[in-house]
Image (cartoon, rainbow, N blue to C red):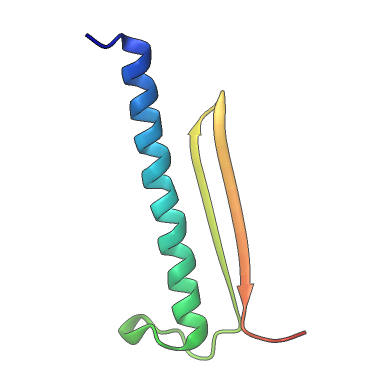
Amino acid sequence: MRDIASVQLAHLDLKRLYGTFDRLRMAYEVYKQLQQKAGPRQIPEPRLGLTHNLGGFPAMSICSVAILGNELG
């Protein structure tokens, strides 16, 4: 029988995994927008895209921000 702590840790690992998929999904959407290949969701002439993600709980929280662009500079 698994103890409560290991079950809670397994649940936290699943939440982190789902959070990773969210961050990847958002970054992929920005990538497709910048390529102008987002289909019906396409924004006209995008130059920059920003994704952000917050998760966790106060003792173990995470924040990520990504700014992506399609211009060489």
